[in-house]
Each structure stands twice: as C-alpha cells, then as structure tokens.
Image 1 (cartoon, rainbow, N blue to C red):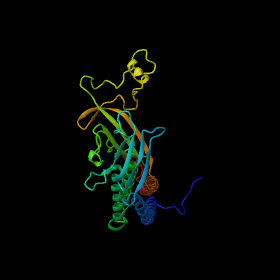
Image 2 (image 1 turned 180 degrees about the vertical axis):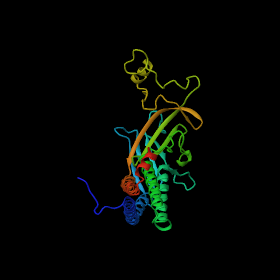
Image 3 (image 1 turned 90 degrees about the horizontal axis):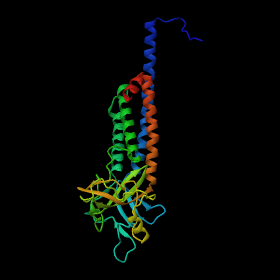
Image 4 (image 1 turned 180 degrees about the horizontal axis):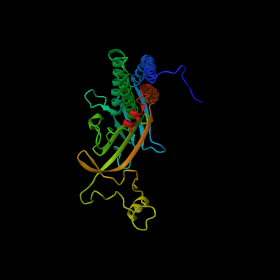
Length: 320
C-alpha cells in the first residue's frame, strides 16, 4: 500500500512543505521543552535539598556483620561528617588498659580538620551546575534556537549522569584510601599512625573501611605476602602459624588486600586487618533515585529533539 498526494506537487515544492512542517514541529517541541525545563528545575531543587547541610543531619549506625569487629555511628550534615564514635575490636589494635575495645572519636573541636565526603561535594557541585544551565536555557539563551537547546540538553544530561555516578561510587576521580588519608587530628585523641580510616559513598550508602597497617621492612622484600602457604599445607597456613593458632595466639587474617603493598604517607605498608561496613543513607538513596529519573527524562528530550532536527545519527556516531 502506498500513500500518494493528489493533486501531485512538484519536487521542489514538496521539499519546501516538508521543511516547513519540520520547522513547525521543532517550534512546538521547543515551546513544550520550556515547560519540561521548569519541572526539571523542581526535581533538581529536590536533589539539592536532600544534600543540603541541614541540622540535625543524618545519624547512621555502623555495625560489622556477624562480628564485633566494629560498632558505632557517624552523623552526616551535608557533605561533612560532624560527629562519630567507632569501637574497634581487632587483634592488631589492642585496646587501652581496662577497656574492651579501641575507641575512635571524631573531634568536635571547631579547629579540628573536617571530614568531608568528596563524592557528595562533587554531586552537589554538578547539581548546582545543572540549575545554572536550566536558568541560562530558560532566561538568557535563545529559546527558539534548536541547536542551542540541543546543546544545553546534552550538557544537562552529562552533568546529571556524572552526579548519579558520584553517588554510585564509580567515578574515575574518586581517590583510594592510600592516596587520600584523613588528617589524624580530625579525631580526639588523634588517629593512631597505624590506622587508616576511609569514608566513601557506594550505591548511595556511606561506606567505611578501617584498616590496621604494618610497615614493610626492607629485609622482607615488598613482594613477600603476609603469610606464604608451604608445600603440603592444605589449609594455606604454615606450620608456625598453625602452632600459634593452637596455642591461643592471633591467627593471620585474610582479606582481599592481605598480600598487597601500598604507599601510605610516604611509607610502604601492608594491611594487617580490614573491616568494611556499609550504612544506608535514606537521603542519598532518594537523591540517587531522583537523579536517575531526571536522567531518563532529559535523555528522552534529547533524543526527541535530535529526531525532529534530523541529527540523531550524527549524535550516535559522536558517542560511538
């Protein structure tokens, strides 16, 4: 079945009519996008409000699974950790005399260094950038210029994607624990030199990794693991280690970093003990869900405008 125009139109006139129709579609879409940008601003404001530094903040419970290795809490206000107490029970970190655990307390002194979650700072910066783009698009730009609006939508889409990625914890800019150690004076008393305290965000949850460290001595070599299995040892422990365990001594602890060497504060170190604890943060979960919804909406707007403009294939080639 075919569709014919009757009476027939000359090819030049047909192309002119097609161009005029396309232009009317673009104009209609650009007008409707102004309303969509208004709703986008509202959603971005909600995200910014969820990450804003409002008292009393979010208090998150920290507890290691199926063990007493780590118990405590932290309080987050915006991007900062303003309060916290962590009790550790690790063989490599003996508690003070008369105590059953080693206590880490985040200092409340106004002169103490601040513990900041860099990923939340990145997310807030990107959300604010999106709000600026929306305002520029609605009030100072050429709302009738399809190329301008398409470029603004692309910028919005990329910024929202990066903001969501920061909350998911999968950005390339995120520093590792040994690259970005916390200031020992952020704690009262100061954090012990052989302890690494690292906070980050993963899947909109606050992730805490506490590590006890030991210096790598020159006579051991930097490639020697903490415990080398010997031939005939089915358990992976040497005879010496099994004897230590049988006599009630500290058994070696195995984790994903046990055999690695890291450069930490100018020293080569190994991780003796490692405790990893996640705590779900309702505000961060809500912000990530909203950013996901906004990402999908802006993606649809981008694609719709590109289809009407006839630039969809060009955009796909550039992204590919």
